Length: 165
Image 1 (cartoon, rainbow, N blue to C red):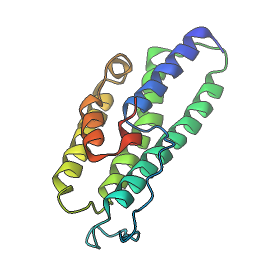
Image 2: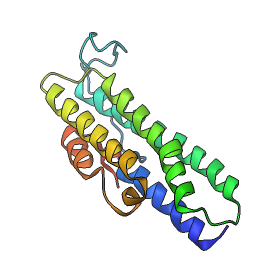
Image 3: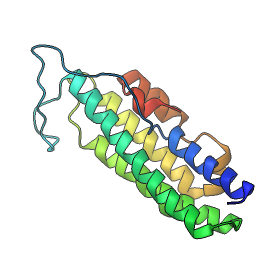
Image 4: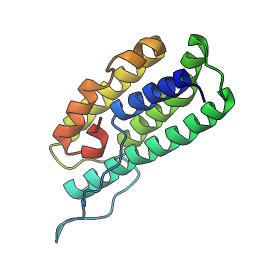
């Protein structure tokens, strides 16, 4: 694989990391007396803080893993050839963007604890704004930080995996 392709794929993976989908070794188990069940329906009972953090971080981890698998397939498609700017944009829009959208959708399905509803709505909005900027200009997104605001909002909510760069 060419050095340029490796650099491009590294940049695309950096976007995935900037999007806040990494991995964490933190234990976010529930404390005694806290609810551990949640409804997939947003109208269900609110999650405990620990369960919200756990489920939110799981959404981000799953998104990263799926994006990495798709990126590996894209890298194999190029082999040793350097992808054109158009091919780079296609990888970003066809591989990375759908993963971001799945993460946003997954976070939207969570029922946050009382008092965290606005924070989650702001995180999802910032995440969607970052995704829209990637769609608008995928090549510029390789060089920028379209998810900086989303990372900050995820950190405030305690979603450390989702806030990782």
